[in-house]
Every structure is written in C-alpha cells, then in structure tokens.
Length: 463
Figure 1 (cartoon, rainbow, N blue to C red):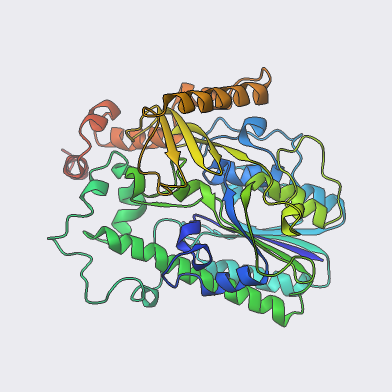
Figure 2 (tube, helix red, strand yellow; figure 1 turned 120 degrees about the horizontal axis):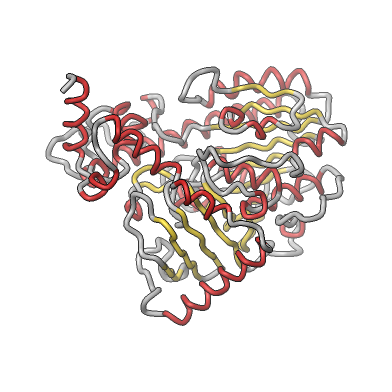
C-alpha cells in the first residue's frame, strides 16, 4: 500500500462545498469526500503552521512537544520525540516529501529518504510547482510501498490566483478599486497593517473592496482543487488509486474579516481551528461516510500507523480514527483543547456544543480575557456569553487550568517561556515599525495607515 498525506495550508473547512459552502470552490474535493470519509468536526489543536504540523507528525499536542508558537527562535523539537516519517522509514517504507517546512525548522525534514524543497528560493509556492516535483517521483517509486507528504500553499496569503479563476467569484463589472468603497478601511487601519502591507496588500494593488480579497481566496481554493484533480488523475493512470490511503487535511483555516482578523489565521475561532479532513482508501474505508464527532490533528499519526500495521508508540495524545472510519465510533473525544502563540497567546476548549477561550496576550488585537460561545445557536461566534454565564465560564476555565497543570506535570509552560520574550509576530511588527521611527506603544495607540505610509515615505526620502 501507499500513504499519501496532503497538507492544504490555510484551507478553511467552511469554504468547501462538501462542508456546506454554496460557491463552486471545490468540485473535485467534494468528489473525493463522496468516495471516502469526511470528518465534519476536525480541529487543529495548535496553530498556526509550525505548531500544527508538528502535532500531526508527532501525534502529540504542543504542550507535550514544547512547540506551541510559530516563527519563534526559542523552539526546538527534541531529537527523542517520535516522528512519523522516521517510524515509517524504519519499518521499510520509502519516505518522501515535497515541502518547504524545513526552511522554518530542521525537524520537518526528519525521517525522509527523499526531501524535495518546493520553495526553490521563491516566496509564493504554486500548486503547479508541487505537482511538477511530485509526479515524476510518484512514477519512479510507484512499485514501492511509499509514504509521500505533499504540502500545497495556494490559499495562503498573498492571494494570487490565475486571473481566469477570479470572475467565477467576483463579478467582472464590479470595480475592486472603486474609491467610493470603504470596506477595506478597517483592515488598512489595523495594528497588523505594517506586516500585511508588504506581505499581502502591496501585491494586490490599491484594493478598496474587501469582498474582492474574499473572492481571491475562493479563487485560490478552486485553483488548488484543480491541482488536486491532476494529482488524483495521476494516481488513477499509474494504477495507484486502490492501493493508496489518501489523507487530505487543512493545517488551519483562515479568517476573512471575522473577529477583526483580516485574511490571516489567528484566533481560536471556528474560521481558523475547524479544519477539513478527508480520507479515502477504496475497499478499506467506506464511501460517503460523514463523521460528526470531534477529532483532532494528532489523531492522524496513530491512524496512519494502524493502516501500516505498525504498533503506535506509548504516550501519544492522538487516538486512532479507525473506529470512526468503520462506524464503530463517532469521533475520538468529547472535547478538544486548543492553543495558539504567534499573533496572540490563547488557550481554549471546544465541545460539541460550546467553546471557551482565554487570552493571555491579545497582541495587536482587542480581546476580552474570556470568551464563551454557544456553537449550536451561534456557529459564527458573534455573542460572547462569558459575563452572562459566569458559572459556566468559571467551570470551563477551571477545567482548562487543570488540563494544563496535569499535562505539564511540573514542566515549564512553553507559552509562558515565549511570552517572556514577546509574541513572535508582534515582535516582527515592532521591528518593522522601528525601521520607520515608530514605536509599538505609539503605533498600537493610533494604528492608522496614513501614519505608517507617511513614515515610510519619509524614510525613503532620507528625512
């Protein structure tokens, strides 16, 4: 058999047809969902990218690996941590990746016999490039039992889909640069603007219509869907369709203006932590099944090991998804604990019915210390019940504290270690501001685009 593990970076579950979205972003992913099992409530325990992928490849949450942040110089995954590709290679599997996470941290290349860097010096990684690198490898190794990890980045900022994909999601007669449209003002005058100006906005031109950026995201998803169709067509041509366990997952989602988050993936809200998860293995996994119970990303490692006939190591936080795949269970747990430590430092609990979030440091955002949402009546998390239902909030906060205490078992909290030197992405904004003679304290008090652009212009002219 072969195992094809596919990371769909920044893919939000609720923007896919198979998860209820009305626009045609994902016709082929919807087809794959019908041929296998879709997990309706899969969660990223740790966000964003670096922490999420570490949890997947170790089968452990960030509190147990120490990897809770992204972009930090403090983090290092101990060599003793069990790593999925290393385990598979040790049991005779040919292991390969088309990925660039190694450029973030060295441990992402562990265990691979073949590691193909998809970045190649470019910042924007196109799904076409991933396919061009992966397809020859698949053809060359198709007679071996292989584990292949593919990492697609297409829905990630900057949103730069081919132009022909845009009209399906944004009316051609609508002007994204209309000066009368002020819907981008909130994003342009947000405290995170110095980071996103160079990383995203400057690449799109003077956009005034926020819906245009949302349409670009949808177009990116549709473009990704076409690349995944090409991948699946290759499996069929090469006779690998039936012998391949295909797993497609989002490492995190994306907020598209919700909760004062403008085209980024932070905050423990459903837009970011609720991720797509699809699995297909003809003849071994039933077709058309939907699992409604809660599952989490660390569950993938024991699931893959069970499929490969390898005994999972002791101490994993993940639980095999096979009972849910075969209909014996509906999910792996009744609650999932959530964590982030990049733009913000927050922890939370999500159950079938509600979510509790506690924020220790809100970074460039304005957040209450506690948030409580009823996901049944308010799936978009618009009404915070923490003050109206203080007893429930207290009870969930106590549960969160006890979980952290029990999990750490006397070890130092890695989130507190990170907070001593500051949140990584706030530190990045601070470094940008210093280049233009602005301080973080001054900027956060009055984060206006014209102030930053004026300071940048003065810097360019030497004044």
